[in-house]
Image 1 (spheres, rainbow, N blue to C red):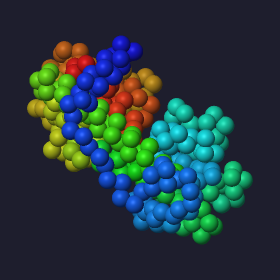
Image 2 (cartoon, one colour):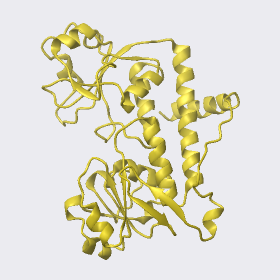
Image 3 (cartoon, rainbow, N blue to C red):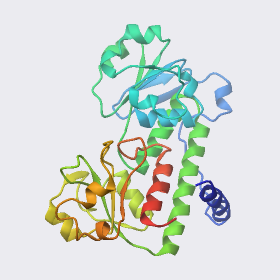
Amino acid sequence: MKIKRIFFCVLSLILALQLFSYTASSGNLPSEKETEGPYSIDVCDYNGNSYTLEKAPAGVYVSSPSAADIIVQLGCARLVKTCSAACKEIEGIPSGAKIASDEFVTPEMLTKQNVDTVIFSSNENADVELLKSNGFNVFVFADSGTITTAESNIRLAGAIFYKSDRAESIIDDIRDEISLFKSLASKANNSRKVYIEKGTADDYYAVGKNTLVNELVEILGAENAFKDKPGVSKVSLTDMQNANPEIIVSFIKDEDFTPSDIRKRKGFEEISACKNGKVFLFSKNFEEVRPSPSLVDSLNEMAEYIGII
């Protein structure tokens, strides 16, 4: 893997010299130089929670894994005082951060942990108004979406933590990696049909259009077998047999679940992916690819399954 990363670094440098120079517009986000002095900035999240911030957070509670990943990449992980169990698993989150689920996040608990900023996941139903009425800044981040969602998440975090220049740098790095993989895919000219599944071992749920995973598959020059299905949709055995994918990538999380279990499913024996041994379990800790900087790692892993690298 180390050799691969060195290869990518060298190839990225070569391609970077050929790429069109892109300067992202940061709107009213402050530059790193501006953060050295006092200023204020208007910030609004996905749920319409809006503030005029006068300073960066002093302490954070985070339950959004996407946000936690971004906080680490921004160099602000030290500010995480407490977080959800899912966020605690992210490399870089302080070992001393206390684990707490949203149902136990109260103003009293947050005050004891020296928290002034709360970051929830869009997938959760937390009592946002209670916390806001007690003086906490509350933001909601998306934990599903597309590459555009990832960029929005990163910019939102950059504004909150007064790290907008760093946020734009992260976005540029993601775009460079995507350009690199697109170049590799075009040279490979290897358009394979891929079935991406979620859900349980007993049912078939295909990841379809308007998802980050579908975008990654397209970047790699492959074809999502169920690209016309919305979001995550249940499909039948007949649908699977008709699609006849050449590669299967499963996001099912079960300690006892293996690629062999997929190949042994009744009716799967004649599917190309099973016949040729191209069945994989996505190995990342997350249940899905998230709209955060970690999408690059997910892209790298998917490229291995598809055969681009």
